[in-house]
Image 1 (cartoon, rainbow over the protein chains, first blue to last red):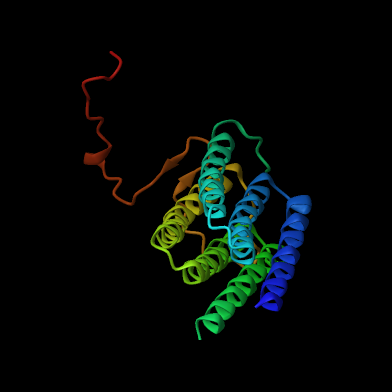
Image 2 (image 1 turned 90 degrees about the vertical axis):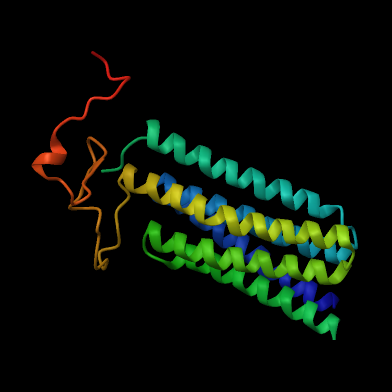
Length: 89
Length: 134
């Protein structure tokens, strides 16, 4: 079991690094917002794996809050982009 | 048995998340990137939450895990729609291989007006409303 947890944590860390690459490159602001969305759902997954590894079910509350905050952040960013963001073209 | 199921759920979920990040880096434009992240990452997080529910097996934890799955499944399409709409308004470019852009002939980026295809003379007459400025 521990090797499965280790492998999945390594995979998700690599995925976080790839998302960081897109966050750094991202040609426009919406691309970066998409990368942030992906961060949050990957962090939900990582929290789930850590909860299994450490046998602490309370960590799920953190995952719930994380998902909620990510949704709010996406809505807020989109609102900002539509109302006052700079145009690319 | 449950151990094996749990382990495979965790691994498959992690692989799906990795695929989502790979798609985020490799795909050419905003909409295809969103296609990768919303579907694959949602599926990955849901599978891992299923594994959590299997691992603990208590009512409170299972309910919370299913709540997380439900919440993610409900909010991911909404967030993707909102971001895609904002991206189109901001003017992010589509991939040069895009076959069809249904909005381009019908949408005016300056006035934010969208044609519906029902623009006839009768429909164009202004219908006064109660709170119109006089």
